[in-house]
Image (cartoon, rainbow, N blue to C red; front, side, top):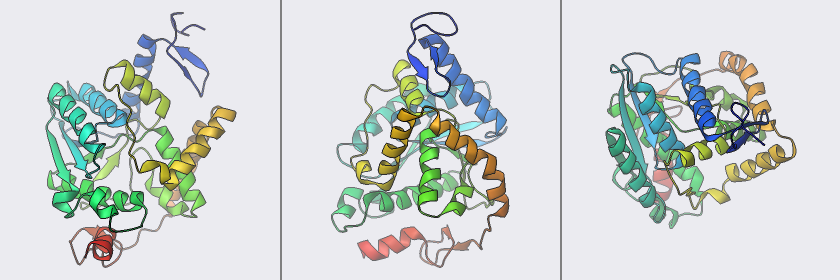
Length: 304
C-alpha cells in the first residue's frame, strides 16, 4: 500500500473511496474538506461572533483548532469557546483540562457554564435521584445551557463538533422513532425557522467520519486520550452507532450513502415541515413549543 498522491506510507484508508493517504496529504485533505463545507454552506459570514462548543474531546478540539486556523486572517470574525460542565467525575474534570490548555494555546477566550450553578446540581447527583436515562436528561440540559449561554454572550452561530457518524446516527434514530420531521432540523446548519431566541448551530466537520476526525486529532497532537462519557454505552444512540458501524464494516460506504440520501430529501423536509408557534417557558422564559420547556419539566419532576 502507498499514498495515492505521493507513494509514501499511508496512515489511513478513506472508507468511501478506498483511497490511501500519507500523513501530509491526509491533513491537507481534512483541512480542505472542513473549509469547503464552511464556504459551500455559508456557515460563517463577515462580522459574525462564532461560539465553539468545546468539551476537551477529539471532535471539539479538532473543531477549535481548525476554526482558529480558518479565522486567523479574518479579523472581523470573533471566536469564543463555550464549555458545559455537566459534573461527571472522572470524565468531564479531565477533559476540561485539555480544553483550557488548547484555548490558552490558541488564544481563544473560554467561558465555562456548569449544571451545578445553572441547574442546581451536578449530573452525578441528579442521577442518584432518578432511574430515568442519563442521556435523555443530560441532552435536554446541555441544549438548554448551550443556547442560553450563547445568546447571553451575543453569539451569532454556535459551531459544534458533530461529524458524519453523528449525523447518520441522528438520521437513523429519527427513522426508528418515527420522528422524521425532526430530521428537518438537521444538516450542516441546523434549524427550520430563524428566531433570535435560538442560536443556530453549524457543523464544519459534517462530511468527515469519526475515524477521520480521530486520526486528525492524533496526528496533530490535539489529544492522546480518546475518553468516552461513562453513560454513553447504555444510550439508544450507542446501540444505533454499533449497528451502523457493523453495517459499514460489511458494506463500506454505507454511512456516506445514508447521509447523501438524506441530503437529497432535506430541502423537501425543511419546506414541508410545519413550525408551530414558538412560546416562552412560563418557568424560565426560554423558547419552547409548550407552556413549560423540557428542562423545567425535568427539574420539576426530579429535583423538586
